[in-house]
Length: 509
Ligand code: BG6
Image (cartoon, rainbow, N blue to C red; front, side):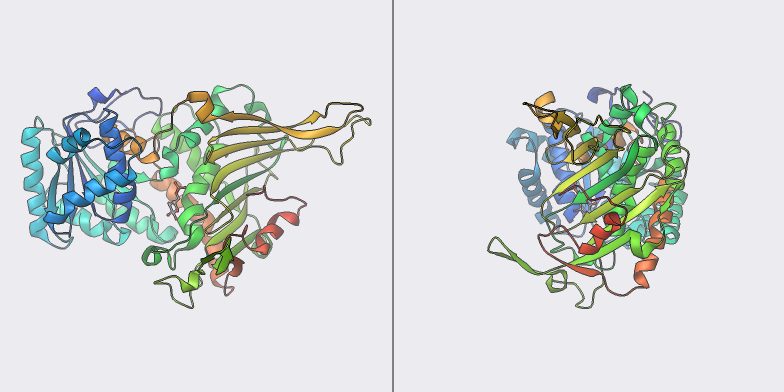
């Protein structure tokens, strides 16, 4: 496993099967811009705590925050975020390790002096870290600031170095459509070089998502069946029970298709549908994902194959849930969709004629993310088999919660005759591995420090994904308001029609 320490990431993009041990991580500093923001407090800081607690971050790792909060408030906020969000039990000794090495620079993104202070602080930190000069800049801020922060880093000479690596980590949304994603991508890459840009899609950091590759390419069982001859259709669902309370600033005008389908769901589709990569290196994986995403497009006509909805107020189990338009910060005329569904097709030999149905929504019945692969029925059934209709064998990859895999098959009901009933063969991560899976951000942060880009989408993947959803969003923009669905329901009725037209049905949430 290569770790690039000389050229800012050009030589090594890593390998998913890399075997880097924590003690081989080079000395490094992660700078988090927006360290007191929502993402940092909910995900990044708890992940850094857990990595430290698990002994995966060496003593030569240090954390540096950049933000506008007064320095006197910051350490307490970080501690609070770690206490609240850590997965492993909170221990004062671990916190002291983190706090001891923590540095903070207070400033705004248009303040050159603050970036000069950042550079001086990094150089000082380097002295205590064996002169590492290895920096990962984490943009935990709105993409509106990416270009400005990159320009400031360049102006103070922090964007490149001959004696250490520079990596920049950016969070979605990577633009608002294909055009803007190109502009943002070009601006960031022009400063750091494309191979030093790590675009986070946190779904790729989830164990169950990585297991899709293992399931498909390590076993002999699935691959022969993995095509249009045996598969009828595929459903990819990400349902949430929470709403968008408190997120109006980001979510209004963005909506479910841009927030989830463009990235998380299309990455899942790519892993399910791509050809076997030559190796599991970042470049080989990306090459296959780009190929399959480039062959993917919405099924026409869009009025029949897509649906969108917005949650409305409802009372469930005695609790009142506001509608989107009642949420703080949302325009009362907002047409932002909180539910999106669409059928896409993959124009290649393997998948010709197999629809992939994607759906996501907020304030639905429950939180569940999973992939359902529905196989074609057996071509012939013995006349004595008592079934209303031939069973569709179904493979369900449960991403969360209750991570695991289910295979639904028809089985004989005990007793006389040959009555058939569907039963599940079930694998659960918890039962099989007896340890909780790490959080996605733990894996992703570690991979940035290792220089392993396998779990980060490339700019080409991002652009290919926008090319799939852009026409659907444009169509919706031209057709007025989204449908309405009650909070706590399974989504708008129009979403059912996307499947029932072809005699299919969504898997129940
Ligand atoms: C984020 C979306 O990327 O993923 C959120 O912006 C969503 O809207 C979140 O709630 C869900 O992540 P997870 O890991 O809880 O499924």
